[in-house]
Image (cartoon, rainbow, N blue to C red; front, top):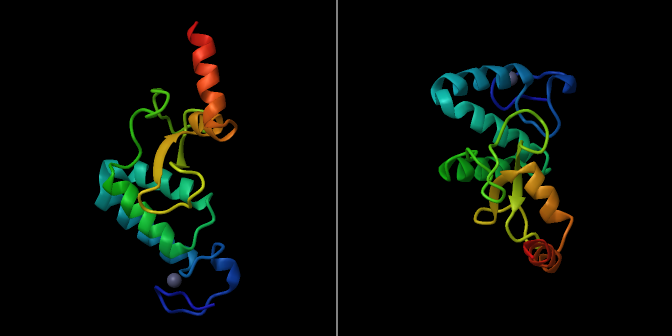
Length: 138
Ligand SMILES: [Zn+2]
């Protein structure tokens, strides 16, 4: 497979799934990105990870990544639950949410919320969430 960055023909084992550039070029680009982005890099890297779990084409992935960075990257707190977002795995880790889950991961329909909020949301309907809220408000 030919790397689209160094143009060298390398074995497939030198490429991550669906990647068009080799792992060496990727490492170099990540290092450059890191020094260029400074404190925003963690946010950027986490978004990249969250996006890679959504099985997107690499073009739509970079469009979304840019869109989310324009929105400010990973928020300090989960907009739903208010908990502090952390980068350890677990409920506080950032995850990509489709605002309207009948639509895809597209610009305008994605935001970063905590993994916990995402699970709660996706395991319930709007009606169930309202019933829960009103029951426990009593
Ligand atoms: Zn390369």
